[in-house]
Figure (cartoon, rainbow, N blue to C red):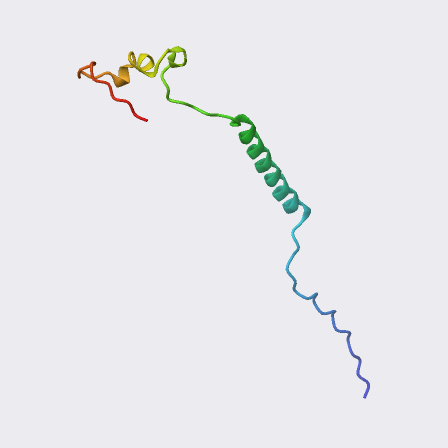
Length: 87
């Protein structure tokens, strides 16, 4: 009995998870660098920013009463002879 065997095809390669390509790594690195630059730009632009709500020109007044006497936000229709001092 002569049998001629045909060769079997090679088995398929084992299934494995594809590794991320260089494009994905480059894109993630680019996004991280952009976020770092944005954070540094924000910190540089807002360094030492301090806003006050003080009335303009009060730093040259002789007393606190004189400084605040012309402030329209503190004007009321009450008696100006009584003064209150807050310590």
